[in-house]
Length: 337
Image (tube, helix red, strand yellow):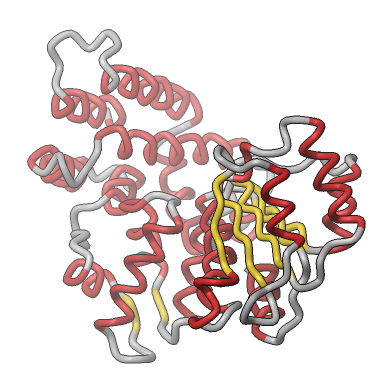
């Protein structure tokens, strides 16, 4: 986030480089920077003349560089955004042409490459030239623990606060897709007064995620050995299959028991040491401590096996006539008995 904010602040302050190469698996940040360029670099009256978007599958490198070498018509800069740039630079001639351009780039042209799902070979000359003449940005896919931190920081930057349970509810329901989470947070910002706290009740009312019947509560009930509560949540899930994917629920429970397996293997199970090893908020360590007493190592291993089998059944492997409802109910019984 700091690097993203730095790039955006530099643009705001007029410190703009001739080339920005935005790479990596986490596409949300690539889009955030690229969209900021598109919306803010040039004045509105200049965009029709001095701003264009190209696509990697359709781009001819010779034509791209011809455009890059022309001078702006109205503004003091011209902006060229290349979407899907991961489809470029597969031919040696394309790489050489870009290297030649970057030896002496046109100072009034800003090239923005959206190079998604991939990264550059940092040993190559092209990468070194981009680093020298412009900005190379790369972001790996965020893990769940990183997403939780990102949610907290994003909410704070918007002028709100959010509790731990609410953060986890969003992640358990929306996954680690930052774009989806960001969209929901923006909706909340239109509804809530500044400085308000985002709570489970707020999420239930405005986003539609039940504060009582969600994967966070199911995981918690299983961790505490509360079969009655867990069964009640599963019944709600199976009655509302469009809102609660069995495949997604299975994946979340798999990660929980995988982390519980790691917790069992730790020599130092103190709160902050365990939190660091598991990559979780220290708040949740107590849940693992209690779950470890209910599910010893051998049983955790068995449960991981049950979850793998359930995942295959939801995908039609060795499931017979079982429905997703049958699979989830059978899984819950096996996990907790």
